[in-house]
Image 1: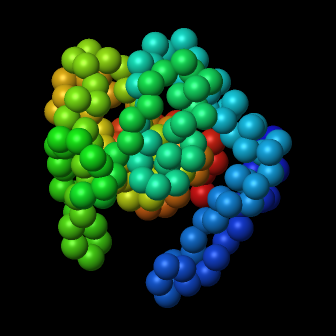
Image 2 (image 1 turned 90 degrees about the vertical axis):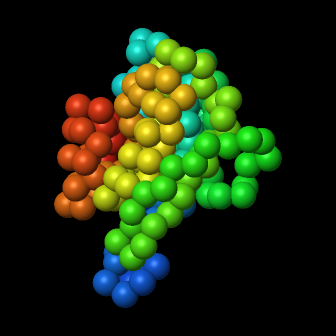
Length: 172
């Protein structure tokens, strides 16, 4: 199944800027068999890990976090760009190669001690996922790990997050 997922992911050269080869997962999403296979494969790694909540990273992380939360019987929360969440939030700034970005999370998203899984579609340098993990820990919840469909391992994200905490279905 993973070979079929890899074959369905298309490379888009020079997007979003020259020199970048974007991994487009939308063909996987549009195929119900592949999409179900991805969710089942992600869930297989985390079954039995007592995951209480899943946090989806804006925006493609939402697509995988919601069905994964359903399958694992976990709650779902989301981390977003500033000003997008309707309740009181906490913020975490993180560095980008060309500046800084900020993520926000509802200030009551987790209870102390809850085990939380951070989910996104693609792991690149790891800055966004690391910031989401810091938001989890600031609420005294336990970061169980990170789940991704794709890890662009040549960019060092899994090393930054801790290889033992990262599970990705495909690596490039």
